[in-house]
Structure formats: structure tokens, C-alpha cells
Image (cartoon, rainbow, N blue to C red; front, side, top):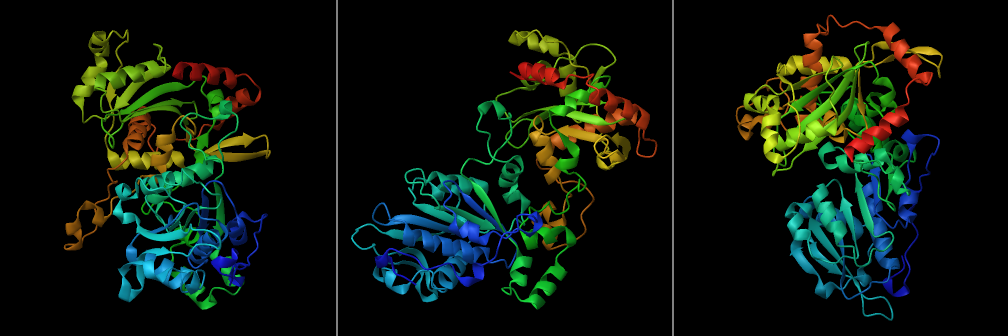
Length: 536
């Protein structure tokens, strides 16, 4: 190991000598690539349990401070974990210092600010200045439970998050790098077991890097910022390389439920425990602008869930149903504007899409628990006259509020059951009965992933003292888009006699629709252009 005064750093330890497997995405193990990276943005290391991601990330922290000249005296580099015990004991005592990534003679021991000196837990560890310089790095250890407010104002030379963290804290810490923004200075490593803490980066990774041409940027889509890169570490690869005990591997993963093994082993994103719509997959149930080709000769309906406030969004969904009883959810209105009244929201809904009179454009189904709002919608022209907006009434009906039956119906629509001949494979394939526009409905897609059943501990903390099985009901949190979907599809299908038992496939109609699309009878590019002009 070479010291700070030499201005160099030792070679990567042998236990990081795994090789990536580019032709096997589920076998990626990119530890060397992560360690050697000099990303201008954030480098994300997602890995399985026991894959060595924490040790690797902290080795990269040491490599950075040894190789990067500090810009000022006591330049802060933050290492952040959930608790002080975790960040001090594991990140510093066990790994950074204990494994020799930071050497004793490079530490300014007299100036260490101790959290618990007897335990060897520091708040801050100043490193000595490189030869010929008065500047130095200061390793600072943080708990993200301090909150976002405690992460403000400081100018940082870099940071490393250990395990998962709240996105708001990450945003505040990232802001601290604005002055220097050194390549390779911003690191995040974790196993993504908690979907609440990884939904933002998961969405960015799914959407890919932000297009260079602004014309290609899709409204409401979160992209992976330029300069950010994602790396993977695989516990199975670590076992095969002899760095993880095989008996431990078999015992540990034998206890893990099948739905969590890819997360725990490969660092793939986890789904929510007890998720309601387990069979919802964006790759299957989401479409892009090709959806417009399927909307001719469809019955158009809307679904509304009333709301106001930051966690209580006013939501409207637009859907079209074809002759095969397949739904195409092609747009959403989703607003948490606290200054808007119900009339303001309804005016926005009225103006977002034209709603011609006639059988093709029918009712709007809404949450029946707010009859006053339903009356306002049915007399909207009168209320809107006070705002000077020339809008017409919105014909709103009470949606069916049988929650469990409605959820079961959406689950039924998600199943592949409509046979359609595929020109590409020259085979008949089964399609689901519901598709969602991936660009226009980001909030609905997000909630379809997160909507979950209530657990016993969710009801209240008293459940711990008097445990009992929870009633089968969904958690009432960020659910307005999925509720609007239930009012829309379940109510209209129920009124048409299309219950789960009575719904039957109609492949002839679907083949006809598919044929029209493939033969170019529908110009979806024109429809898309007109739609975007309406939104603007």
C-alpha cells in the first residue's frame, strides 16, 4: 500500500477480480468496471447480498481520496448510511480502516472528531495533506436519519451512500457537489430490497439515458441523467469465484422467497411485498404511440378519483375499449395543485381531450363517495361561467365501488387471454385485455407497481401488542390513479355484463383491428401529432 505522500494508491484487491459477462445480462458482475470508472455523474452499484458491494464502494472511496488532489483544507467527503452505528462500525472501523484501505500514517489522529471514542467510531477523520500541499481530505460519516435539513449548505468533494436511502436526502447531498464535481466522486451502492427507496432510479434505468436531441424527450418521463452509469455485482458469481462460502450461499438463498431471489442475488429491483397487481409488467402491458392505431371504432370512457393536496391527487384517466373488450388507457390527468378547486380540475379534464357527443364517447365514472363533486361535474358549465371558460357539462356517473371485486376484475384484465396472430412470429399469441400508454400515464404505471395489500402492522402500531391477520384490503396511499382505473374499467364492463365469468375472447374482431393497423389504415403519427397539439 502506498501512502498519501507518494500520491498513489494500491492496486485493486484480488477479491474484486470478477469479469463481466456481456452476453448474459442476468450474470453481469461489473465490479472492475465500477472500481475503475471515472463517471462525471453518479455511479450506481447494484448488487446481491454478499457480493462485496460495500467493500468495493469503500475501496473506491479510498482510491479517490488518494488519487485526487483536495481543493481546499479539510475538503469534506461524506460516507452515508442509515445509522451512525452502521456507518461508523461497518464503513469506517471494519472496512475503510480495518481492511487497510486508509492507512494509519495517512490519518491526522490528533484532529479526529469522535462520536464514541471507546468504540472507535468517528464523526470526522482528517487525512494528511499530500506532499507539497496544504490541502487535505476530511472523511465525514453521516446517518441519513438526520434528515434532509441536516444535509444542506455544505460544499462537498464527494459522497458515498452505503445501502438504500431516501431520495430526498440523495438530492440534497448531490447538490453539495456543485462546486467541484470531480469525476468518480459520487457513489451509491445497495441491494434494492425496498422498492419505496429505489423507484426513482428504477424508472430512470428503465427509460434509459436522456436523449441528446430535445425533440426526442418525452413529456413526463424521467431519464437517466447524462454521465450517470449503473453497474451490477452478482452473489452467484462471487460464490463461483470462491469469495462466498457455498454452504452459506445455499442456506441463505434457501430461506429467501422465490420472488426476492433475483434481488438478493443479482441486485435486480424488487417488487413490493404484497403487491396487488403482481402480473403487471410494463414490457407486456405498456405501449408507446403505436397505441393510437388501435383506437378507431372504440368506445371511449373516463374514470375519475377526486382529490386535492400533495398526497391526494385529483386523477382522471381516458380509456378506449375495442370490440374484443380490450382496454387502451391512453392518457391521464394527475394533479396535486392545492390552489385548484374541483371546478378548476374539471375544466382541465374537459380541455385535455375533446369529448364529442355520440355513442363512441360515453360516460365518466367517478368515485361515488363524493356526490357533491358529481353534481358539480354535471352542472360544470354553470360553475365554469364564473371563470369565463366556455365549457360544457361533464356527464358523470357513480362508479362501482366494490373494491375487492374491482381489483379482481383488473387482475383478470391483466392476464394474457386474447388470441392474436403475430406476423413476426407467425404464431397466435395471447394478449392481455388492458394496455397503458407508457409516456402519457407515468403515475398510473408507477402506482400499478406499488399498489399493495394492507399488512397487520400497517393498520396501527397496536397490532404488535394485539396481533391479528389484517382484513384483505389495499393500503390507502398513493392509490388515486389505480382507483380511477378501477372505476373506469370495472364499472363499464359491469354495466355491459362483462364480468370475469362472462367475459369471452373475440379473436375475430381483434384480428380485424390488428390487420387494419398492419395494413396502414390508421395513421397513428397523425393522431399523435394532433394529441400533442391538444396537450400544448
